[in-house]
Image 1 (cartoon, helix red, strand yellow):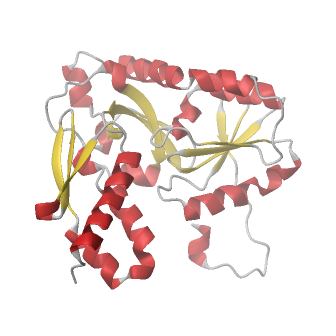
Image 2 (cartoon, rainbow, N blue to C red):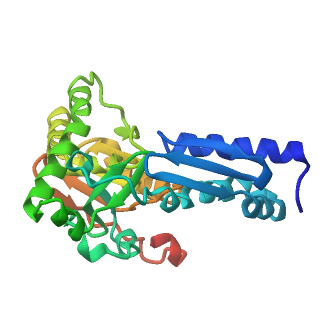
Length: 281
């Protein structure tokens, strides 16, 4: 069922604002004649029809927020520049995602990657206009005259530069909150702090000891000093945010001493406790 013109106009504007908030640097214009949005940026020129989403919400109005969130997240691949941009070493960074996510990429075997923990890994990606992330396959960096070692070194340097200001902010913290820190300033690459040694060292230095970390969402990193009384509840906090996340990454908790990252075994349910199997995923 199609809504009234004024309803469709309000709906279009709502989705337009969501896209602009999610994908910074793109221009999003309305195409009323086709009930769509026109998205442009360097290397991007695409039209996103809104009728399917509008119809789905009309059928399930109680799920409107969830359907819109899924739609906004789903258009990322359509916003990846197809042409007009050459690979730039200045845009290469480490991107942290789950191994399950990496398996969904068609050219995952061609990426420069590094395992972090049981469920998390990092791979070299290109930070594109419009807040788009794209894993860079070997053929492209070789064509640009780079080898594996150079790609990894450049990505590490760029990642360190990306979070340099965070290091100073951590060192300047006067009081450690009881539940630790929640870092959420970068919607695509926040988890990449795990690939920024200076950030890990600053957290450990400020905490006076090892730090527990979690990346429940690709744009959220949770951290707490391992010696804090609330540290024993940290796993539950990470798991809760992972289940409620719009862009889930990992429910795993890792530990760092400022130099290395180690997986933290998950505590198992007490004997006799009834747990729905999918809640333990």
